[in-house]
Image (cartoon, rainbow, N blue to C red; front, side, top):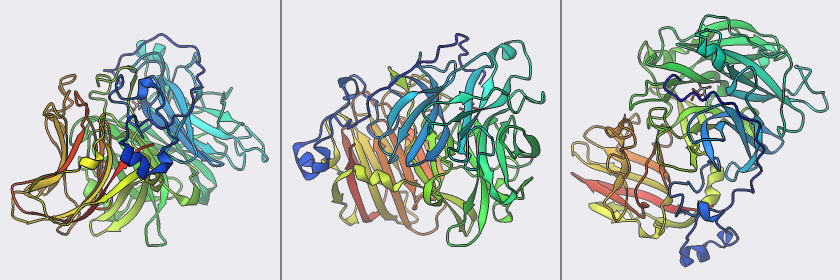
Amino acid sequence: MHSRQHNRATNPPMSIRTPKIVAALAVLTLQLACANPANDAKQPQSAAASGTSEPYRPRFHFTPDSGWMNDPNGLVYYVGTWHLFYQYYPDSTVWGPMHWGHATSTDLVHWDHQPIALAPDSLGYIFSGSAVVDTANTSGLGSAANPPLVAMFTYHDMAAEKAGSRRVESQAIASSLDSGRTWQKYAGNPVIPNPGEQKDFRDPKLVRDDARNQWVVALAVGDHAEFWGSRDLRSWKRLSTFGAGYGSHAGVWECPDFRPMRVQGSGDTKWVLIQNINPGHPNGGSGAQYFVGDFDGTTFTLDTRFAADVGDGKAIWLDEGRDDYAGVTWSNAPDGRVVFLGWMSNWSYAQQVPTTRWRSATTVPRELTLRLTPRGYRLVTRPVRELEVLRSGEAPIAEGALAGTRELDAHSTPDAVTMELELAFVVSRDAASRAGLELSNPKGERFRVGYDAAAKAYFSDRTAAGKIDFSPDFAPRVSTAARQAAGDTVRMHVLVDVASMELFADDGLQTMTEIFFPSSPFDHAALFSEGGDVKLVGGKVWMLAR
Ligand code: FRU
C-alpha cells in the first residue's frame, strides 16, 4: 500500500452507463467470418477499441472502459446475473480514491458496464470486499419477499493514516434491494471497527456457514487471517485467527477467499482459504497462496493431507505466473459451482504498464475444483466452459515429431492474436528439450510459454516480448513453475488475448498467467521445440472472438 500514490482528492459519485461491450475483434479474415456465421452480427465496439489506438485492449477479458482498476470485489450471482464489482478509480489510470465499479453478465463472457456502485465518503475510500444474498433476511435490511444483497467492504480512512493512527481500516456494509443495481450504505457503519491492533485490517470475504447458522467473514490482518462471526451481518465477534507458522509471510496478507468446497469424487467437504499476499510470489511481487482444511464454526485447521506442504515459509500457489492477484470466488453461484476471477496484474508494475485510457484487465472467469491428489489436496483451475462460445476455426494439430517451429497461420489476425490452444506432447526424459507456444511479430519480439524437460518446469518468457522497460520489475527473468503432475505426457491449455496468456497445465493442476506488451501486435503464433525430441500426441487450436 505504501508505495502507491495516495491521492487525497475525493471524487463525487459518477454515473456511467456505457453500451454493452460487444464484439471487439476488429479484423477477421473473410474465410473465418464465413466459417462462423455467429460472428457476423458482431461488430467492433468503437474505433477506440479497434486495436489501432488501443493496441493492448483485450478482446474477451473484462476491462474498465477508462480509468484504473485493481481487485475484483463483491462477486455475487443473483437471479441469472453474475455481478462483478471492482476496485476502481475513474479519474486516473493510477490508483487513487477507491470506488466499487460494477459490471454484470448473464454468461460470464459478455459484460455490461453499470454505474459505480459505491463511492468514497467521509469514512474513507471503499476498499475490497465481498457480497452475499441474505436469503432469510437475517440482516433485516430487506424483507422475506425481497431479500437484500449485502456487501461488506473496508473503509480506508486517509486522514487517520496521515495522522499515523492504527485505526485506519474498518469493515462496513451496504445493501441492495434492486438486485444489485443500487446500494445503500448502512447507517450503523462501521460494523467491525478497527480493534487498534493492526493498521492492515481489510478485505472482508463473507461466507454462509449453514451448519452453524451463522455468517462468517475472513479478514486479512497484516500477517494473518482472522475469522469473525455474526447472526445478522451487523454485529460481529472475533472467532479465531489463522496463519502463524503456515505459508508465506514475505509480504502483507490481503484479499482472503474462504469457503467450503466439495472434494471431487467423494462425499467430503473441505474449507479452502485463498490468501493473497503482496509481495511474496516465487516469480516476484503479488500472488495467491491457498490452504485446505476444516472449519468447525470457530477455528480453521489445516488438513494433514495439505499441511506438510505449507510449513512456515512454504506455500502452494494458486497461479504460478505473475499476473493473477486478489482473486476471489463468486458467492451464490448456481449448481454448486466455484467460479474464480483474478486481477490480471501485479503491484510490482501495475501502475506503469503501457496502456493509456485504462489500466488492468481481469483474468478469465475460472472454475475451481478441489481434488485429493497423491501429493495431497490441490485446487484445479480451468477456464469456465461458457468461454467456448468464443471459439471459431477449430483446427487439429497433427501428431508426430515437432522439430523447430510450426506456424499456426490460420490463427493470426492482422492486428492481434487471440487464440486457444490445447496441446499434448511427450518429451524424452533426458533430453534438454523445450517446447511450447511462441507468439511473435515482424519486429523480432517474441513471447514463449512452454515446458522445459531438463528443468522439469513450465515457463513463461516475456523477456523479449516487446515493451519491458517501463518497470525493472516487469521482466527481469523468465517465470518458472516446477511441474507437479507425474507422467511423460505434458498437457498445455492456453488462452491468448492480445496482451495476456493464461496457461492451464496438466488439466488445470497448475496455472500460469502473464501479460505482455509487444510494440507491434503478435501476429504470428507457432509451436516450437528445441534441444531434443518432442512428440506431439494431439491438440487443437481455435481463434477466439467475441
Ligand atoms: C489488494 C489491495 C487490497 C485493498 C485494495 C485497495 O490489491 O491492496 O488489500 O483493499 O487493494 O485498492
